[in-house]
Image 1 (cartoon, helix red, strand yellow):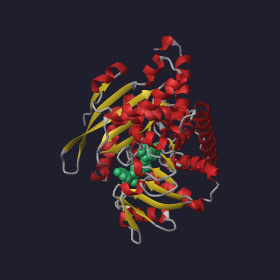
Image 2: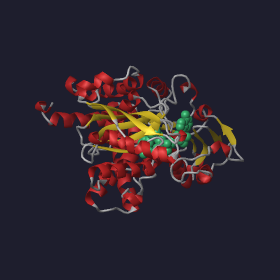
Image 3: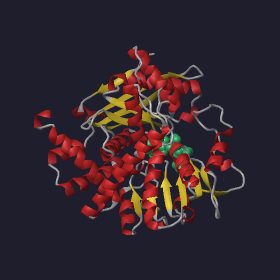
Length: 444
Ligand code: NAD
């Protein structure tokens, strides 16, 4: 099947296919520009970090079960590779756009820098509603995407991983397709693979676990027992389920969770995330790919909309679904004391300014959800060395690294007298600018 590639380009050519809608990206960049001012960064460094390095857009033709060919549009963006090969997930969603992928790759650049990982930032995505495809079509699409972007990725160039509506099964198919083209075993070209396909132990709950370690550290200052802390979680996928489970196991009260179809909540006591998860999975037809059921179908619960969940009177609100969930339209109704952004970009820039004024603290995405890429780094290291770690070591290393970064961000909060998001951008931007400057002016 012919794959049509459109432009593997260097930065100057990226403008040719740049999307017109730019609000998400522009709004995301404000945080970096403010950090750059605090650090008095050189204009050249600011220019480099304000633009993606290169963009690939592809059309992937897939023969569907009815014999018709459908073309799916996909993207891969390398934002910046100053700190190392670029790294970032692949999203399958009907609302994927070039602007969204650019923004996600920008966030990955700063996230890897905040965590001091030897990676730059990238992201990929396909415009598709994966729930409308059967397993065979989904596999064909995933393999087609890898064929289309093969020259743009690689274990020392750009290493993809899972994101919304992609998972270990899909990473396994992608690795297999890459290996077939390369005529070699190259497990380090992608992370988030199944453990029996050279994935890493602990990658499944790594994103949530990183946030869990930070939340546990943060709430020490409240001097409350976990059973006195109420939590609401928006999004009950990989990240949302695991953060609910980990906090629930420690005694936190999980009062509400939701997925794309709506949510459930309890006025008293706590939900049991594990039984909700089992319920959600019970009727699925395709093991380990997509759930058929929504958690709304569970009996003995009160239903709640996603919008209402965000406004609950809880101690901790955890958005773990998509971007722009808290905006200027609903921010004045947020009652949580702390918001931990496990999703990327769930709070708009305007809404964040309002939260700062209301003294609602936000643990920012580029720190809070960095556990995923950190264990992806461990997976890449294990694949390169052939030496596989036990779960205890993964958890220990993750905890050490993420709390070190959390403390660095807290120090920047105090030093620059800023909120946690601004502080995280200062930490990330400082490391990136030092590395750009160390390469010398003739590098460009
Ligand atoms: P996932 O596909 O496993 O789950 C997504 C969840 O969000 C599903 O439960 C879905 O039903 C729900 N959802 C979708 N639209 C929604 C809506 N409008 N309202 C409420 N819920 C909705 O994805 P994931 O891997 O858990 O990713 C969730 C978020 O975490 C994303 O923003 C992603 O970028 C971010 N993230 C994920 C990782 C990772 O390693 N998986 C790492 C860092 C950040």
